[in-house]
Length: 191
Image 1 (cartoon, one colour):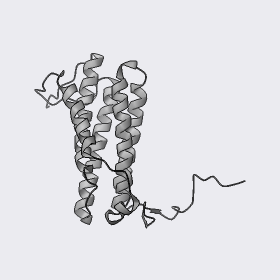
Image 2 (cartoon, rainbow, N blue to C red):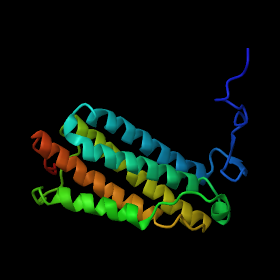
Image 3 (spheres, rainbow, N blue to C red):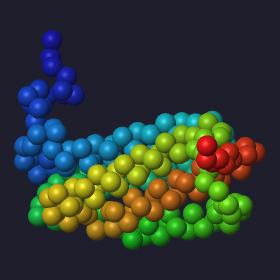
Image 4 (cartoon, helix red, strand yellow):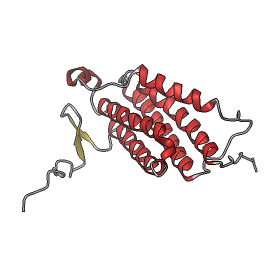
């Protein structure tokens, strides 16, 4: 029987290759960082599966699909050493990607009641899925900042800004979805 091309066995001893071909430990900060991006992308995929059950969310679905592509762009850059990114001509997250999120945030936020309290994550299932995306995005952001501080390596241009704005987008989207679904948000009540 012929071996599948899915597994290479090259990582069986705890190492993997970066985009450039450089071998590194699977426990390396860089691997953890772009692994978080992959996890975020998967969470978005799950949220999309919930959104696709309604025809009301086509614009949101299209935005999230573009976000997923942008996360692949970002992940490919994070999986390559800074000095080799230009050589590999990797696709980039741009200021336009950030601006697109801001436009959507402003539009959704304009129909929401201003917050007077913190709210608990949850509500409608679609909203709860987006809150998971938001918290995962914050985890990506922490990993990126930690990586930069620990290694001194510059992050891809607009990468951190995109991730920061993306978490804001998910927060507003979760609120907007609850409003659209007629679900009242639960305010935080300190014990």
